[in-house]
Length: 461
Ligand SMILES: [Cu+2]
Image (tube, rainbow, N blue to C red; front, side, top):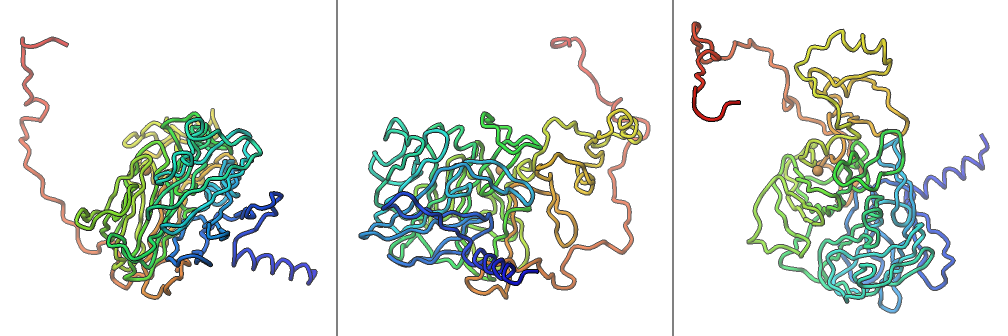
């Protein structure tokens, strides 16, 4: 091997591993150079280089947009453009997004900051950006036609306002939004408090992600944009399990998870092993006396929620949407239910006529995750996560909270599978299994015969 070439490759790899960012040359003099993200991995948190300090968030399978300080104003540059997003390993989708990815980068500022956002439109149609949840001058609210002219193709608009209240926000277009949101245009925004706030606790881990969904025909690469409800790719930050990174925390950390919903339906997000409280909504932090413990929070369309808890339980804990269809990928909804149907021999007969024919398993869907089903190229596997005990029968909106004693403060890297202490895992029972007691049945009077139908009254069917 050419040593110079391998050395160059080494440095290229090292740079990508450390920063994960490539800064594109800007032809637009006077604007901050737009940062571009080429990876769909979770980027390390970005500590502020200027302005007031804060504890940064970590965006699941995402990143935070760098800014520059100019005359006391934080300047950001978003580029609306077509992107190719890896939704799970080996499965890519043509989307529209910002700065190389869908969702766009997370914007982090501090309460009271003056913020200037340049938005360049490299889409094939006009767009705009609405700063969802912010208090700002009406002319900065981003509804094309109502608050501003839409941003023409090839043009750059500038938005400027003060981040007036701390909290969890989103951004997305308000111009042809059915198409642009269906194509993946949205991003997260976090405004940190400028001083200690009675309703905002200090946390050791602060995660954020958006709930989004796509309708991608198996074997194709571009979402159908007219779908209203029947989506088949249920994502967190345009990723599906097993492509969603785990949430890695240190034992006893206080953890905040910020979630925003930009799909067409609500998502009950369920955390295993811990109770949390909703410490913030779209409208800001909730007063502590208004909070109650729960393990599932329903997040309606357009809402944001902050879930907070103390990670007191070591282990690997699922966190997922509790709508079971949202933890499946690329399911055909027209598959007949075959549970309880004995079709032994039938498949072979059909396969003589239709060689690729497959049927839903008659003992549930479990068979299917072990079958090596031939799928069209570039299709999301229906369920393909692998756990230390075997296949995980879920996909879509699922991740794992990993709580470890030896996770270092500030270290967000994946500690690998949990090492269960001996004797703490559910196991096969080795003793005898007596038949369960049953209620006695009357031998001479079978249940069906004891039903007396009323005669001569009511309508006849
Ligand atoms: Cu859901």
